Each structure stands twice: as structure tokens, then as C-alpha cells.
Figure: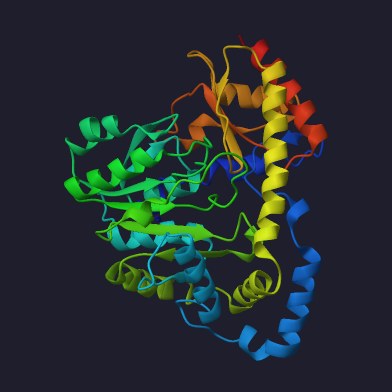
Length: 394
């Protein structure tokens, strides 16, 4: 049986976060574990009307094969939006993908050989970590400071010691910490990429969900050497179920990723792309995003208010200006996995720190909280319970 699986799959296990969902079937459990947008902002009526019109007016197009690069009008919409935001230039192209996760998979398939070094933030997005594991990359985690990745550590402890092929960052409202990398660090990171000859995957699915503070320019917007692959998504601003993501990269990388996408899924479902395009062009997409930001800003502030009131003083946590998550650090000696088990026993759940680390076998005194998908009542109740659980494990 040991020879049944390919080496790249033999040691893989399912996402710890996805496995967590199975434990939360109990409707009494208050879950801060997910990463989903709130159903309160899903434009269900509008999408229903759009879908009916598509089948009646564009049924043949919607139900037929499409081109791998994506539905051209949607590609042009995304490109125009990114150009307006200053992320890419007029000469650059955009490809539609099946969710932002597919961009991570495609760029890893295209650039990373077995044993190549991929640098990730520590902690990082579990979907990215599992993708790099599946391609037998050697992952190295770099600590995240309050203003983003610790670049001194990156250069002295990683870049000077080994050859890095790819660096993966969620620079804006990072998952899982909610931290945003400063403009100065973004510029310095590009300089390091040029100096040490590596590529950057800038995963940016949360950038439009800012409800406090000032926007920071995308790393891609400052890239003059074609070192940045930029990934975005409609999952957090419109609907994760539609599975519409996108990317932009220098032409030879983009073309190779398109070839690999053909092998993976031929193309992203045309129907989903049509639904997405019709919504963002026939309705006020920016007003829809603002509605989401207003809601998440309220929920974030409420959760932080409750944590300030109930959490012990030794618990340190981030105060994000956007996105869907915040991160909690407890003193050394706390076990996040044990805390999770006791939390579930008390009907509250979160994501353990170990789920978001390169080495998942260790115990970490930290955890992630999601506030976007809980009612105000559950935020108040759940944080109070979690505070009592933390205190009980002192």
C-alpha cells in the first residue's frame, strides 16, 4: 500500500480548516473558524435575475466550452479595474481562473521543481501551504511583524543561505493575521527579489475590503522587472461559490500558466463568468463592496471591543484595517490545539495557529478569529466564552 500514492501526495492530509468544519456540525457551536464572506451581502435577488436572463438570452454561450484565458468581456473589465487602480499597465494581460486558489496552484506548477525553496509568511494561508507541499517544495517561513514580513530575517536567515525560487505573500489584510505590509517593506521586498533573483506571488483577495485607514499600493504596481505574479478574486467581494479568480503576470509566465490551466480544467465555467460579468457591469459593484466594508468594519470593531473587555491582558491581538481575520497571540506555554479542543467543548471554535504554519506538528500559542460570518449576538457571546476558556488554561 505504501507504493500506491505518488510521492507528492503520500504525505498530504486535508486542510485542517476544512476538517474543522466537520466538527462544527453542532448548530449550537459559535464558529469563528471559517473564512467566508457574510451571506448578508450576497446579492441573491440580482444574481437570480441575471442567471435567468443569461439562460434565456445567452444560453448557448453559457453552456458551451469557452477559451482558457476566460470570457473576454470579464477579462477586459478586470484589466480596466486593475489599470485604474494602478496595479498593472495597459499593455499587461489578465487571465480568469477558477478561484484565486488556482493561481497558487498554477504558478507553483509552472515555476517550482521538487525541492525548490518557497518562502512563505509565518503564519500563512493554509491553502497556499498545502499547495506548496503538494509540489514537494521546501517551504521556509518568515515571521510577520506588525508591518508585514520581517525582511531582515528574510535576507539574513534565508536569502543569504539558500536559493529561493518563489516568495508567497498576502501583503494586504493578510490571512491569517489581518496585517498589512507597509509601503516601505513592499519596495524593499522588490529590491530583494531583484538582488537575489526570485519571483513574488502577491495574493490579494482582500484588498478592496478596507474599512479603516489608507490604501497601500500593490507590490505589482511597482514591479519593473516582471517579478510579481498578481492574484485576485471575486470570492470575497461577490461570491466564493462562483469560483472566479484572476491573475496577471509577465507574458511568458502567463502563457505557460494558461497551458497548465488547460490541463487542469480547460477553462473556468462560462456560466459563472457571465453571471459575474453581468453583475459587475449592470449593478453598482463599488456600492456593493462598500456595503460589505461597512458590515465587516462593524463586525471587526465589535469583536475587538468584546476582546478588549473580556480577554486577559496577556493576550495580544491584531487590529486589522480590512479583510476578514484577526490573529491572537498567547504567552509561551499555551497550546493552541488544546485550547481549540476545550473551546469546542464549550461551543466556540476558531482556527489553531498550527494550521497556518510550515511545521504543523508543533504546538503554537496562537489562533485565528474570523468575524465576517457571525451575528453580533454570537460575536458577543462567543468572545465571552472564549475568554473564559483561555483563563481556565492559565
